[in-house]
Image (tube, helix red, strand yellow):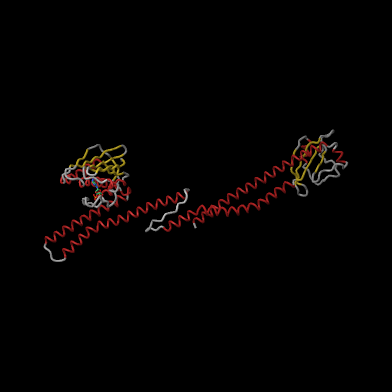
Length: 451
Ligand code: ADP
């Protein structure tokens, strides 16, 4: 319905404009035709007047009735008093404006349009007549019937041709509008078919014009939506899977313990396993919640000015006992403050994850170095370790949710840590990058805009 309305509206506007153009054209042609025909008539009157003046003794010829005007034409002579000379053969029904005669007697020639007694219009030329004695005036007039007839014919033509043109144009306009808007109907039909459950359908883009680009934009949007939905589905699947493991252990442990009477040591052991698994689940759920919060983006972040270097130092202090226990040297390189605007808790969690990974994925005797500094318009935090490294083919995927390089070397995590780091960096308008050499070490670099 909407496109039908656009179609009709477009055609209506088009017709309105065309009507205006046709009216204007008709008016201009009407005026131009009148003007040219009148100019021609005036020229013929001047020519006729010259002929009349050239006739020898016209006044006498008129008085004698020897002079005969052309059919339809009026020729009259006036004496110096403005009285018309008697001419027995003349048509006397035409009244001549005395003002014209007077100005001709004063020596001025002029044209005028007069209406005869029968309602017909006459074009009239009054000029001084060169008489030997006193001044006289000569008037030559011819009917304007041809001009009015031509103008009427023009008007008739327009009255017939105009509506016909408008009718044809309305048809053509509707046809063209329908053709131009057809891709929109197609797009509507396609997008209507695309369901939330199956985002596979795409608009058939056939041109590179405005509508083609609209179709392409919608397709790109559908691509993004489909990817997001797939990720979401996978995420839910992975999360359920991760939670199912510890839950199965808890269930099995409890069922086993309840099967018969146990010693208090056995109960303790069972409860300890259950507590440990529950703890793991809680950590996982906490991570999922953190991730969901970070995903909400900047709106949910508290914004304060924070020295990234101070946060890094704090994190290093916090993890120092863990590093020591695992015989890993953990260093913080002191640097001037690097102030960013952001959420202290989130940024702390980010660095904590990176340093914790550095420690977890290094063997005893390794080193983890943490630096934070300002680099131009950015603040940077760098965590380098001399650990096991990440194989190149996995590098681009370590930030994905639930991605672990390989389960065998995974040291306890669910593969959400780096995903959370990336979500936090992005929510702060920043980035996180990784470089790694297998067996040599890994460096994570967080870049944030300065506050
Ligand atoms: P997890 O919580 O399982 O450690 P992460 O998202 O933190 O998950 O890391 C994803 C994967 O990237 C890990 O399984 C690990 O194999 C690899 N990884 C992360 N940090 C390091 C590092 N510093 N050195 C080597 N491998 C790392």
